[in-house]
Image (cartoon, rainbow, N blue to C red):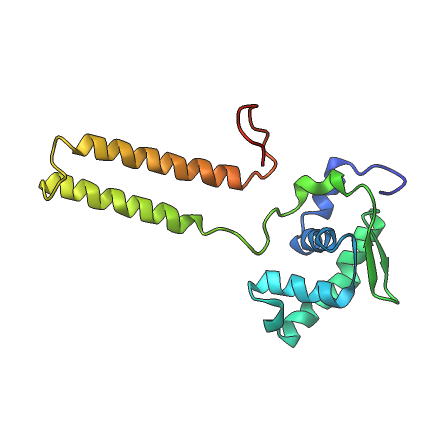
Amino acid sequence: MSEHELTQAELFDVFSNARRRRTVQYLKRQGGDCDLAPLVEQVAAWENEISPDEVTRTQRRRVYISLYQTHLPMLEEHGIVDWDPDDHAIELLPGDDVFEPYLDQRLEDDRPWHRLYMSVTSLGVVALTLSWLSVGPLTATAAPTIALALCLLVLAVAVAQHVSRRPRIDLPLFFASR
């Protein structure tokens, strides 16, 4: 990285800004180096939750100015990137594994977990209502079994969501590693 190791406070300071985190994330995805133009395009797309093709000139310009004047010089100052403002070339310096925990793990492919939770909750409310009204196959004797099944379903969804947010989770030996 640089001549000195970055302290945790310095890492927090550097990666407290989303544009700097996204810049490093993009560089990692590109194999460690890129030109400024595609970086600007992608960061603007992430910020506006659109595809890079839909980025407007204003959105692009806003990101370009802040990266050029503020964020890339700061990343270079801390020894995270090598930034050549004349050639618009950016290179991620070795040692990037130190700041991996500070980066966004998912930028464009967040899963809509709230929809899944809402669906399971709605299903539970419908089952509870039908059980309470003793309509159809849900009678007072079957209701506890249905409630238990729904609770286990919610637990399974929560565990799946938790595991998906931690891609490098260490599983016990009898489970396959991801």
